[in-house]
Image (tube, rainbow, N blue to C red; front, side):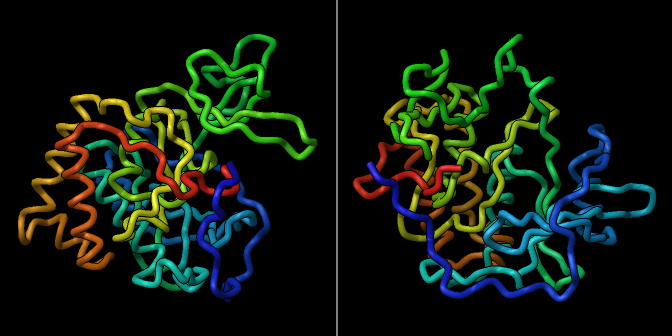
Length: 309
């Protein structure tokens, strides 16, 4: 199977007016004891200092520090002016879709997307999201003595799929050797897979899954989510056709109640970010999960984003 390419840009990326470095600089972030409200306050109100740019990103993605009073927080800033237009996502902005996806995750009570806000910044309005620190090989919980770690989503030799992992796709690496795309049978990752179905995520690559130092699993890069048409493309197909755990179904049912309540806070917030048709499609997808409690099978079209990382 040859995966379908992700949405192609309609134009080249505009350059930001401020010069930025080619690499991000690491630093300490806000204490883990800080509440979500405190984090959101810093992201919304803190002074943004650009530290560098992530050069591999297809849209302008700037690494910043947000400073408010005595608190400093590492974050990612994606200005709207740095977005590459997509012909199949013509409405709104990618930044708005990122914020809308975060609001849905929070309404579910899952905390599966780092704190995300929409605000003005040094290069104009855009999305600002908390940076997630991830472990290196030496401190990774799946790094066995004498062997490298296996990430939650990874490529492995065709004959060595790790125990406790699903094989999703067989392919060949750049040298022509057979490899297998795998992901862990992990409840934290399963929750993210359910979220992707609800969000209609068109671009869940392996690199968009982060395992934080806090033990959480987070999804990032939700700029092409929430379309009214079916566009689900993900590497997390290991639970296809399986029952969704009851506690996740209950959370999705609660989300449906919020979405069906006219004038609810969630609906009003989403109205500022995505179209009315997209809100109704989101509601319908959530209803299907809540009522059927079953993960979908891959569609007939190409179901995996390319490249998968």
